[in-house]
Amino acid sequence: MSYPPLRIVLPVATCLLVGCTGIPDGTRAVTGFELDRYLGRWYEIARLDHAFEEGLDCVTADYTRRDDGGIRVVNRGVNLTTGETDVAEGKAYFIGDEDVGRLKVSFFGPFYAGYNVLALDDGYDWALVAGPNRDYLWILSRQPDLAPLADQALRARADELGFPVNDLIEVEQGEACAPWR
Image (tube, rainbow, N blue to C red; front, top):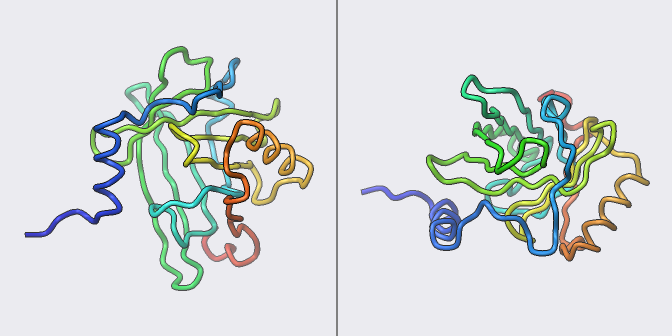
């Protein structure tokens, strides 16, 4: 008999026991959130690494509307060493008011995790996104690169919120990604 990999089972079991749609203590999601402006492609600039993204660069997230009122999420990444691509499709729904950047997202059956937009540029050019706790953090940009001042400001904000910013890894989005764009 074949069993799912441990890297899938452990996070799912944890979600069942403690719930995963929360928001890190002491943080707040942005208000005035406009989904239509958030939809589209985002490039992952930096992240706290996890097994489900381990070894991936050229990571993008595409958000579109679903017929059921939710959001279709397609994450893509490439292992630049092997050339293998990884694509995960999921769905997301608002937690509470739709003008607050708090969603629950699922890539695995009925199990959802928190997706919390903690900082968002007025022009929707960059975002700081956290999962349900301080183990999950992403810096996203509408372009494959992010202006150094914006990057520094997002890292400073994440540090103020108690995230382990020294553990952020840089995600390659340069010329090496061209064949997969």
